[in-house]
Length: 254
Image (cartoon, rainbow, N blue to C red):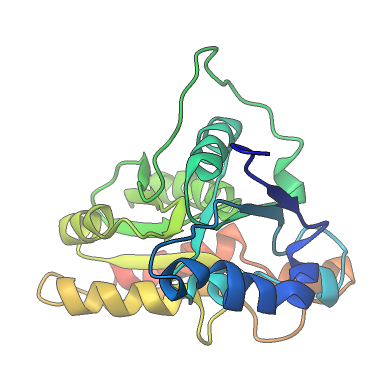
């Protein structure tokens, strides 16, 4: 039907890998390969990364797998307000959008305005202003960073939290502006360190903000092992407030 825009729901983004060819080699490339004659206004959505006790085959963070390819947009949220505004924008976009969700956020409650609104893709948000260290994050990891920031505040370290919300397109201006102000940067994200989105952010920050940095850019991500099923082991692998605090203290004391 004319005007309809499909929304494809994956039970989990882990299972999207069996459709990886269609998403990456078709949806992402048809506009360019057709010389702009055909667009693909489609949203792929579903839970991403670790929840609780789901094991390695249900805990993959696919951020870097899809953000790697031009032609795809990759978006995520941390609360109900942003989930609503970003999903509206994703549906209206004429490009294929990967909308990354989390089972652990489905129970979160939050205020959403009664009036219609959208949040343009590619706009980061300062969740907490600060002057000592910028912690760059996105998705449900924002909640862990907020816990860490409160604990660090009690120790006299003022953390600025930058929620990217959109990985493609990336809000470079907000990123560089924040890091240039605090002169220190930690990237906290789900997924692995090797070839992760955090590595891309660290590279871009050092390319543009090198003369402003007073410490190396550090990353906090999953431990480099498949996700365990057991609760005690899973807690050792995922990103915790304690690990974020350790990284912030390292760059602050460098």
